[in-house]
Image (cartoon, rainbow, N blue to C red; front, top):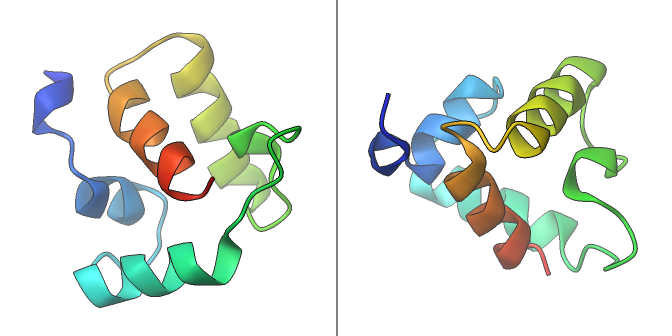
Length: 76
């Protein structure tokens, strides 16, 4: 799948989180700012499964990496 097809809403759904715009904005507001010394996938608010997914996608620079980077930027 092309990375351009992944949206923030798709990412939140993939992570098992509410994926509507209001829920995404609320999640970001509740969890920012993320300490710059902490990798996104190591943030304490993820479940083990969410953490594993994020880590794998980032390390492998996989399809989801672009939108994960976007989330990381929004949590900064």
